[in-house]
Length: 223
Image: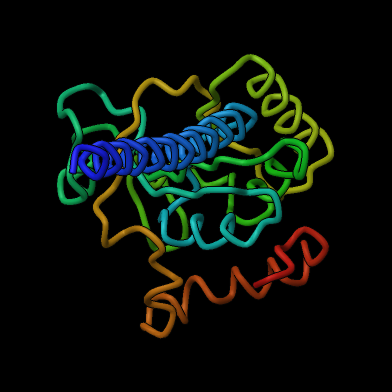
């Protein structure tokens, strides 16, 4: 009887030990994956663009190879409202611009390419306006996060103006990112989820068609 009890105890201890080892191995796998994701994100670069309605800009950059994430939001307000709503931004009183925050892998797509796509997929010569959308919230802007981005954006702006690529001078604001808040969920992935609505068909689809022709070799292959 004593031998059976000892065997039972030994079996239980062994079972818990094996479960513990299995759990430890699984935790190690999860930890390793999380660390890899942190490393991967550490290698990413982020820039924030204002180029009119963020639905359009988001749709454009979601197609680009090397772009890992595109998020619609609001940036560089006057500080009067923290985490403003869409309704508040639309009044123009908060000073925020409708923006997209683009996270990309510089090993797959250069910042110069990102900037070229930015310049060529909206009108950077109209002050506080894109098409029928008018107000400071629709201003053309590069909100940079480091000096290299600032230098590259200023170089591009000067080059395009010097070469008279656009009929009128570029008025794009080039300023350090001072604030950012994510837009409401219904603004995220807007074109992907609402591509058949009238606004998307009339305003966004022509931009996408132009993108497919102008930057065909820069698009994601699985889209």
